[in-house]
Structure formats: structure tokens, C-alpha cells
Image (cartoon, rainbow, N blue to C red):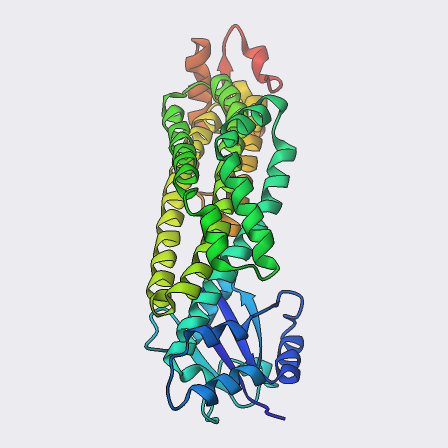
Length: 400
């Protein structure tokens, strides 16, 4: 029984290849059994051309077992930083041979071993294509789960609005989901492609419109300058952001499933083009992630700035400020949850904490702001700052 395993990664996932028992021990020792999925090595025979090594490679494929693991952004970076996987001539795919997979602590250490199954360029190209498919499927499943969580947060009005927008992609959804069901049962790739080939444009149109609307929400925020106004708008934005994220998630889910069928079709009809097509799909996905990140980062930056404006008015509006910060936190969580299936790492947002009311009472800037609002002057007294004002009762306790 062979004790070697091979790893191949495209930066989004890792394929573990070797004797079934050895692969199982490796995954079990690394605590990764639950996350692993079967990887269809048999499909790689399609990518092989006639040649002296054809029979040998095909035999090697038949004897091996393989499992796929989707990488989180953190584990993908760790994999890159470890430097244990070597680049190959297949763009974007790296590879390693492990002679002792039981040494989990050094599982990325490349050791000398026998001739590698994955050193064959045609096989490695096929591995890259299948990894891309599995990455799309994993992302689609995570987006489906996300949709359920978002749905629970939306009010009836926003659900109706979302359903009205998504009705535009109903035909595409029916065709793609039927094709995926048949795909999972080993359906003919050419037949499945005829079912979905014309549906991508509608999905992209709805997706782009939702992204633009999400960006437009950020443009409303800089005009807000009163705590009560910010509070009201933030509450509305909780629902509006959820609405657009829900539409985007559904479109991305359908787009992922579409790509699975598309890559299967390319593998079946033009295997020599699979590697280039895979790289094009990867670049397109990276571009859409960049668009999402740019839009959501701008939105969160504007919302955080509005939170800062509200926080400057704690003395007269502490309850409103508390509400603003609650909304800001919930919107941030929703955005991070949306980023996760797209393998976008949680963004570092400016740390912003509501100032306690008593601390604000000792803050000259807060007092000055409050005094300006009530049209009175501030006076400094021994031991702190107090306001001399007709309405100084307002400072005895926080007001909404």
C-alpha cells in the first residue's frame, strides 16, 4: 500500500490524491474529514490525448482516490505563506508530493517520492477545471444557506420587493436548477448546456443592478448630520442593505451553478481549452469579488462616518446614538456574512464605540455641541463642566 499522497491547489481549494486508505488517514488526522468532498478523478481521462503514456496515466487515475477541500481565505493564505506547494506549468495550480502524510504538522513539506500522477500536464489541467467546478458548487451551497438567514431578517415589504426583482430570473433559475439536478446524476454535458446557455445575461443584469443600488445607498449617508435623522436612516438601511444583499446572493448562486454546467460542457467538447477557460472563469470571479468588496467597503465607510457624527451628540441624544450603533453593527455583520461564501475576508472596519453619557459630560467638545444645539453657553466649574441653560434638565438623564 502506497504511503504517498499528492496535493494540488488552485488557491481556492485543495485536492488530496492517493491510496484511499492513506487519503482517509491524512484527512482524519488533520480533522478535515467533515469538510472533504469526493473528487471525480475518472473525468480526467477525457483530458488525455493518445500517447505512449496514456495507458499508464489512465491506470494510475483508476487506482487513486481523491478528495476536495474548499479553502477559507485564512487557510488559503496559510497555504501560500507556507510555500510548500510548487508552481506548475498549469497557470494558477500548484502541487506537492508528501512522502509521510502522517506528519500532519508538516503536511505541506514536499519530499522525494515516486513519479507523480499530477505531473502530467493534461491531468493537471483537468484537475484545475474540476476544482473550479467544485469551488462554484461549494459557493452556491453557502449562498443558499445565507439566503435563508437574510430572509429571516427582512420585513414583509422587503421580501415582496426582493421576490418581484428575482421574478426576472425565474426562467433562468428553473433551467439552471433542473440542469444541476441532472448533472448530479451524471447527465450528458452537451444536453445540459442547451438548457442553460442563454440564461447568463439575465442573471448578470439583475446582479449588476442590485450592486449599483447597494452603492447608491452609500451616497445618501454623507448628507445626514442630525442624530434623529441618522437613527431613522440607519434603521431603514438595515432592511435596504439586506434586500440588495439577498438579491445579489441569489444571482451569485445561480451564476455559480451556471459555471458548473459551462465547465462540464467545455470538458466534454473542448478539453484542450479547459485550462484557459478555467482561468478566465477564475478571473471573472475575482473581478466580481473586487466589485462587491469596493461597493460594500464604501458603504461601510460612509455608515461609520455617520456613526461618528451621531456619537458627537451623546449628551442630548444618547438613545438615538445607541440605536445608530446597533444598526451599524448589524449591517456590518450582514455584510461580513455575505462576503464569507464569496471567500472575501472580513474587512477591517474603523473601530467605533459609542461614548458613555457620563464620559460625554466631561468632554468639552460634547458639551459645546450640546450647548450649540440648545442655544446656550457653556461654563466651566470646579471639578468638571456644566451647562448654564434654561433647559439644563436635559442633562440630568439621557434623552432619546
